[in-house]
Length: 151
Picture 1: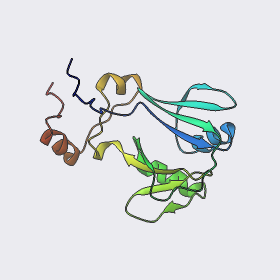
Picture 2: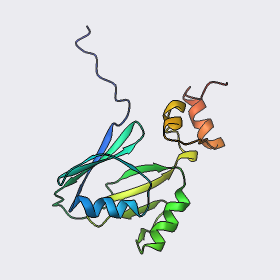
Picture 3: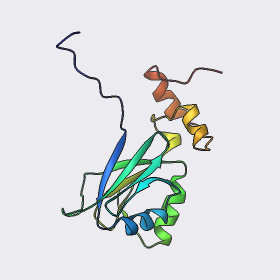
Picture 4: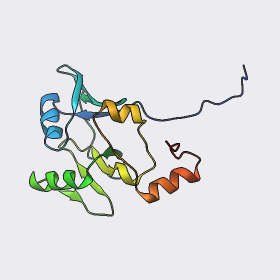
C-alpha cells in the first residue's frame, strides 16, 4: 500500500440541511418536489434522491446563506420555477434559479439535461425516469472521456 496516496473524491452521498422543524420542512419541500422519504423522526428526515439523499436535521442556528449553497438537480427546472412563483417564494436575482428556504438554506435548481452530472441508467430506471442530456452536456462529458457508450 502506498502511504503517500491521496484518496480521490468521487461524488456526494448526501447533503445535510439544518431546518427549524422536520414536519414543516417536509411540507415546504413537498410543495416543489416529488420525493420519497427514506426515514424520519422528530429530529431528522432523509429524502431519497435515487442513490443519494438529503438529510434534514432539526436545529438551524446561523443566519441565512448568502453565496453558500448546493445545486439540486431536477428533471424539470421550469416546473420548480413555476411552483416557487405560485407559492410566493422569492427567486434570488441572478443567472441561476436560486431561492432560500424558510430557515435560510440556499438552494440552486439545476436541470439534469444541461450538466455533466449523470445518473447511471439503472438508477434512472429505478427512479422511474427516462432523461437525456443536451448537446452541450454530451460534449462536456465526451471531452472528459465520460460519454455514455453507444448502445
